[in-house]
Image 1: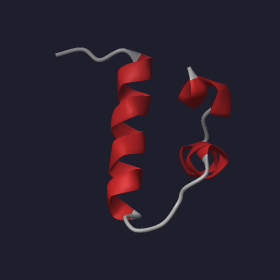
Image 2 (image 1 turned 90 degrees about the horizontal axis):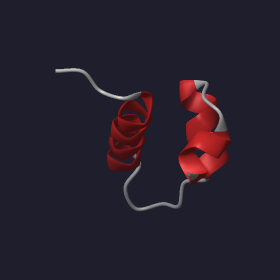
Image 3 (image 1 turned 90 degrees about the vertical axis):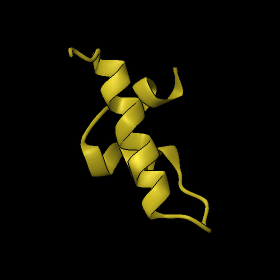
Image 4 (image 1 turned 30 degrees about the vertical axis):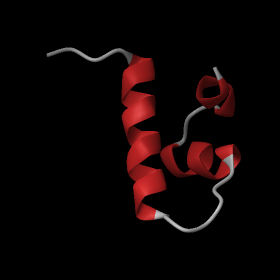
Length: 43
């Protein structure tokens, strides 16, 4: 199965949010963790 880049970003975001339950997480924090553009997470 092939995933698009945006699908991969979505999965990584969900995993990050799952590991950080109970607190607010900034988009920039996720972008910095995975070294991706924060604009991709906002789309």
